Length: 146
Image (cartoon, rainbow, N blue to C red; front, top):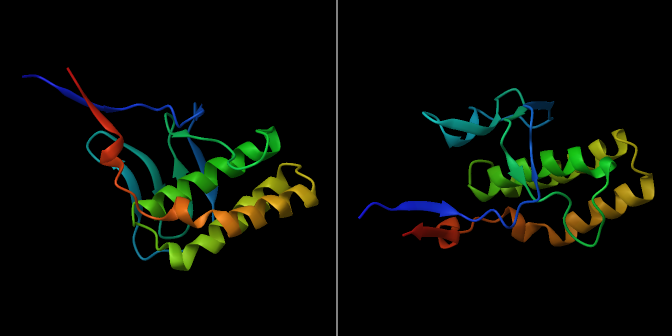
């Protein structure tokens, strides 16, 4: 029987429409990628710290008790991509999670978020974000049809 395997994107609210690059402070020994090299690479972190996020990448936006505002969107995109690298065990969460959280705060401030809210966002991801950086079996979310 011919079947397809797919994942319902109900957990994602946003999709990147243009490629986006961001220079991080994170250095790795070799490039890290999310995607299928022969098909499409959605996220790449180069050894010199450039995070490349390709158009089509989907993310859930800001998480937790907050509102999705323009001052939060770029930070949430970068943060979600870095956390996905950790979830997929390509980036060591024990070493780089704090850096990813600091980047979130830094980008939110750059984009005009007030200091109080940016600090609140940072503290919440420090306190409650670890489970989102831990590996999970995403095949449990896959479905087949027919």
